[in-house]
Image (cartoon, rainbow over all chains, first blue to last red; front, side):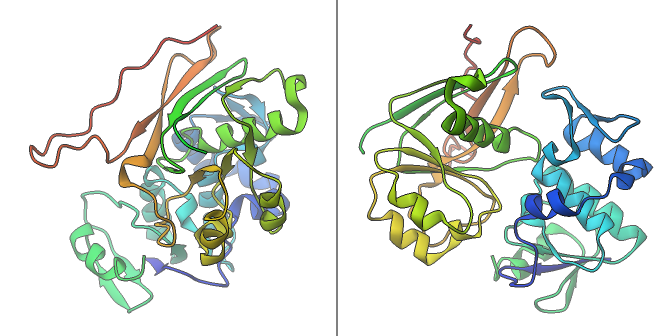
Length: 145
Length: 169
């Protein structure tokens, strides 16, 4: 299940790009799901040596990936930290839901991310409410952001 | 600083062009749309000038404000277009709102958070669209569009994108 703290959360990693820069593991880029994420969000390809082939910037290091993608990778790979998922655009929402179907993940959000028109299951940690669509989510989460 | 600030910044592969009308502009939107790349280009040009190969044209200095030393940095910024990338916790703080009231800069803030301490207009919230073909000889043109400002409340019409200008060379 996806668990979300809305609003300020002091112990969450706010600047996820900086955290990624000093903590990413090149091995992560051998994971087929990460390779898929890189293609889907940044329209880029993971090369065999862990470098990334970006259509915009050429061959780049993982630290140059988009802020949203780096945050998504951290949420997937670093399970003992809570990350500020407001560095992710709405185009990352589907991946958050997908990862959370495989295991529980907890994130901090400081804005109302659009999780799309389909049903989902999200626990709002501020209140303990479990919501199943955006119509249920907005009135609860909106109190905190 | 008063009036509009026009910015054009270009590298071999990318080009951005935008006019900023008010002292606070918010930049948001999907991941990988080029927001941080724009701030990086401004910062590289600020640090290394024409050695970067970046061509920057603006009617005022362009600066980047970041990190825990933001207050010290801000003291040296006057009459400038100041960019703040996402990940800078201070941008949502009361202290920042208080400090910038005493400055004459324009601010472009990359964030999805609602900055309740700052008096910005809903019409000055922009996203970025790109036009052009990556890996071609022409730089890809990045165009900002108003996310809410062009919405016709009376008729309920969807926002319309402004026409995209041709790439300069």
